[in-house]
Structure formats: structure tokens, C-alpha cells
Length: 161
Image (cartoon, helix red, strand yellow):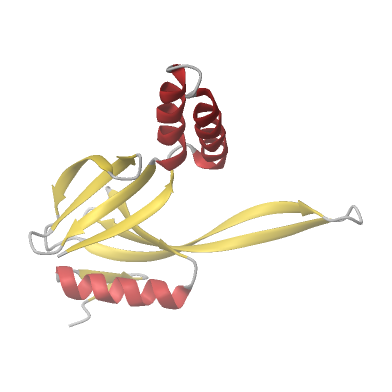
């Protein structure tokens, strides 16, 4: 069984919008010239490339990859030893919003990250991103059960078995 998590667009929102623009321009141009096919290809690469990871539960390994065009996976597989731990952290993304009344409002968007860390706590690998804490706790419990690895809670490691 494989579990797949997709993260962000590789080129961000600007790359996505510019890619859609190039695809549209290529669709218009393809009837007049063969250069439209090149524009469509470049636009699709910009718009639909994402970063992701795939967890192979049966073989205890994880693949950190870039998916070109959304389905061509380029990445490497790494074995997950049983002494690694899962860590749940929250990250707040602050942003400033200007209202119509010219007031500045600070808004923070919370994201919860599930991170795979080794025992020396030197290497960290992002596994999953969620917007709610409940969903993150469900995912970390599910991953701990499937991969048979510990969950790191604050300063103490605790196994959910």
C-alpha cells in the first residue's frame, strides 16, 4: 500500500498563473504555428508541477519527489528505520491585510506539519501538511500504526501501540 501526500506547487502561485497564461496562448497559437506546442508544454510544466512524497508502507520506505506535469515522478527512495520518530508541529504564517478603511490587520494562518526525524534529531523530513490539529493527530496516529514507529510528544517519545 502506498500513501501519497502532495504539498505546494513547485513554482508557486505566480508560476501557476503564468503557466495557465502560456497554455492559453499556446492553444491560440497552435493553429497558426508549431511554436504553440512548445508554449503549451512549458505552461503545463509551470502550472502543474508539484512537490510530493509517497510512503510505501509494505517496504517501509519513503520517496521525496517532484511530480512534473502532475504525474511524472522524479525523486529518490529512502528506507525508514524503526528508530525514527514522527513529530507534530504547528507553523503560523503571518500576513498583513489592508482593509478598505485603510486599516492594517495582521492575520496568521496555522498549518500543522508531520515531520519524520531520526534519533540524532539532525535530519528532518516533511511528511504531511494539514490545516486542522484534529486531522493532523489522526494522520500521525495512522502513520504510526502503519509504519510501527514512535510519535514524539514534547520531550518524551511515546509509542501508540
